[in-house]
Image 1 (cartoon, rainbow, N blue to C red):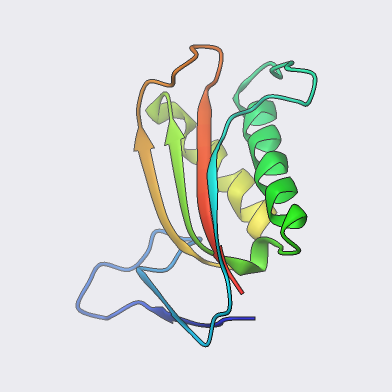
Image 2: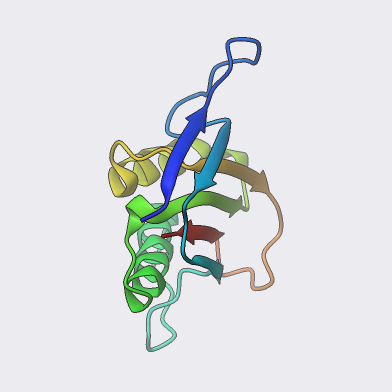
Length: 128
């Protein structure tokens, strides 16, 4: 597994919670780039509501990690694309539930998704 160091310098505002300002990798053997995962189930169904969609997108991220023999503890960078600012708090709550104490580098952006039925998309980078 990669040796992961986090950097949260006192000269920068503190993280709002659940992430690190910088993540440094050393001694890693592999990098996995997870394409943006949308909230679709294997049959193409899209759950109703933001929370259900967020949980589904995370399940998809976790499935890609698992296919590579990795888990959420291997995540070093996560980018979440939301469609509305009102999703910030539920997104943070669900992310914290999924990641537990793990705090990768993080970016959250409000955008328009390719398909309007998707309320978010999550992409990630993992290292071992």
